[in-house]
Image (cartoon, rainbow over all chains, first blue to last red; front, side, top):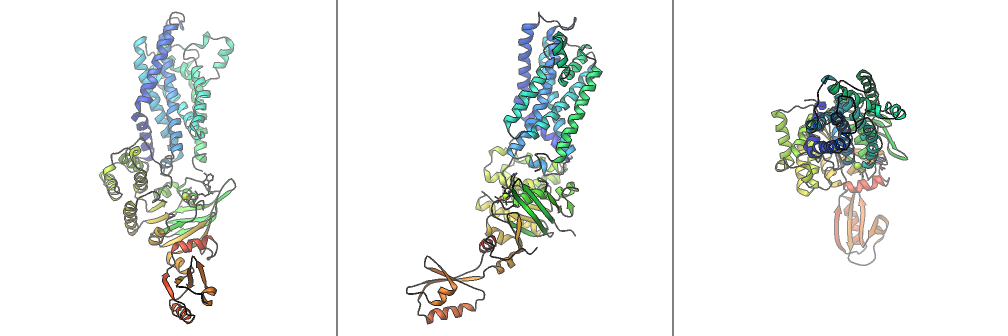
Amino acid sequence: MSGFTTLLYKEVLRFWKVGFQTVAAPVLTAMLYLLIFSHVLESRVRVYDTVSYTAFLVPGLVMMSLLQNAFANSSSSLIQSKVTGNIVFVLLPPISYREFYGAYVLAAIVRGLVVGAGVLIATAWFAPLNFEQPLWVVVFAIIGGAVLGSLGVIAGIWADKFDQLAAFQNFLIMPLTFLSGVFYSIHSLPPFWQQVSHFNPVFYMIDGFRYGFFGRSDVSPWQSLAVVACCLGLLAALTLTMLKSGYKLRN
Amino acid sequence: MPPAIRVHQVAKRYGDVEALAGVDLEIADGEFFGLLGPNGAGKTTLISALAGLVRPDSGTLEVMGHDVQSDYRNARRMLGVVPQELVFDPFFSVRETLQIQAGYFGIAKSPARENWIDEILENLDLTSKAGANMRTLSGGMKRRVLVAQALVHRPPVIVLDEPTAGVDVELRQTLWQFIRRLNREGNTIVLTTHYLEEAESLCGRIAMLKAGRVVALDSTANLLRRCAGHSLRLRLAGGQPPPVLRERGEEKDGLWSIVFDRYEEIETLLAQLRNAGCTIDELEIGKPDLEDVFVSVMQGRLGAARP
Ligand SMILES: Nc1ncnc2c1ncn2[C@@H]1O[C@H](COP(=O)(O)OP(=O)(O)OP(=O)(O)O)[C@@H](O)[C@H]1O
Ligand SMILES: [Mg+2]
């Protein structure tokens, strides 16, 4: 077992041990969204001609929960370790900055996938789902989780206090995920807001993810993949540069 | 054979504070070394630089010949650090904590690893707490786990940053017994502590740090010798203190102390007092201890560094 696999194992074990908060709670939240929104909007909104609103909503909620929890995993683990000081246990061993990044991001993906699967299982009862193109589902789930996991690493390293992390979460992550077409198709927005949505990378994650279920989406899944993969590349480069320089961790 | 630790011209500033102002230090393989200095002297900063927790502004550090930056994997494998701050991961039990720490160093689960963990637990009197969650341990027990974590990958160089702060007498003794054994078995030990009698009895060589500089570096025996020497302390039954006391001695609450270098001097001193007609009420001979040395070094009264 290498330092990398141990760190990955420890990060997974960390959220699994408190699974009630880290898995069950977000699944419940997603179910509440589904109950309320589908109840209010089911009869009024029809997204694609063949897809009911509830069916449309389910993949969006799955992806939103996956992304938010991927972010929460790496960011909260890092800030807790920094504030309590036990981050030294990871900084003292011969673990490279690349392994450090890989372990935190992979654990974030795992948490995202576990929560996403939980939401899917819990909400799929309410609407018939088909998996038209399951490979897209998997690809967007993993890359999306990696993007938010990287953002979580950045936020966790940058923030010195819990309220700074909360600000990052409330003013960046929440708006990005809520205004991404989870609850609506952006085609139902006025043209200006449609344009704005195209600058939100989370929109492409959700749109591409949904394509895997319905074979329909607002933009081509290839375009979404390109945007999301570029985001991941940029964020990975930024995070690795931060980690390599030892920013806030080694000084 | 490279030295266990080599510190070359290491400097580190925090804003206006010069935490390390060009430190040079070499610690040979197998030494029991003391790093002393008042609060804020830079001890922890030096240890952090050695462990790669802090990047120095300039200078280089090596552990067993491995540069802590360019060859950090080997350097860190060779080094076990007990941090000064009482830190722990509240998610895990004592045994899990140690298993994870071993894993970080690439040591896979095996009977040998578990035996070593058991042995460490035993020696630090933690066996009964192996399954307990870290949160439920007392402060002293958490400190022991920190020591255990530093040893789990069997590092040849062990650095302990105030390992006995807040630890009861019994554990202090068990801890030193264990650390002494590790030192006998060939490990290099570096210790910082504010309990000077501890350093005096354990360390073969000592460096004293003040404001980021090494202000004394010598064997413990030499440091003790270089200090003011022995002192004769006495109290007079009454009457005027004779000239010899007023010239050579210092008085505090009626207790006179006269510093001397050789025991033969006592005879002359006592004769002079007798001739002056003094009656001695109380008398003792004080040996210099590390605290005297420390105080005189810090006040700048005693020798410069001899690196
Ligand atoms: N992260 C930091 N930011 C700013 N200043 C720091 C930081 N770490 C240490 N210092 C300063 O550097 C100096 C040396 O601190 P250091 O912790 O190395 O002292 P020390 O010898 O270990 O003291 P003590 O005996 O109290 O543990 C102090 O003046 C301290 O205030
Ligand atoms: Mg210190």
